[in-house]
Length: 68
Image (cartoon, rainbow, N blue to C red; front, side, top):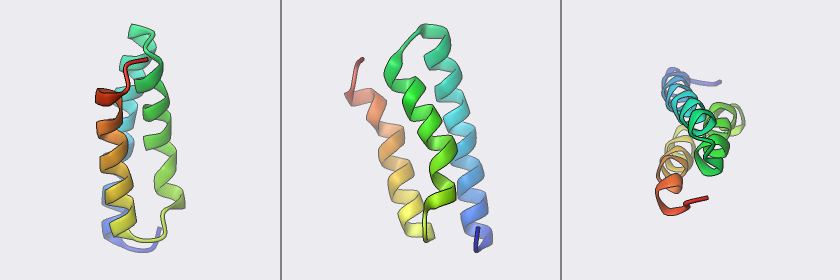
């Protein structure tokens, strides 16, 4: 993690991802479960803050369009 902004955004997306993961596991819903795991892992691989925020926002919205 290069900057403070990346750290804060990464923690925010990780917390949201944990919520999606727990929801998906309890409801046995596949899409929120996978998105939750992705939200917890992807901040480690993002090169800058802008990419982090864009990919995070797309991942957060994804389960609302994919009902699996």
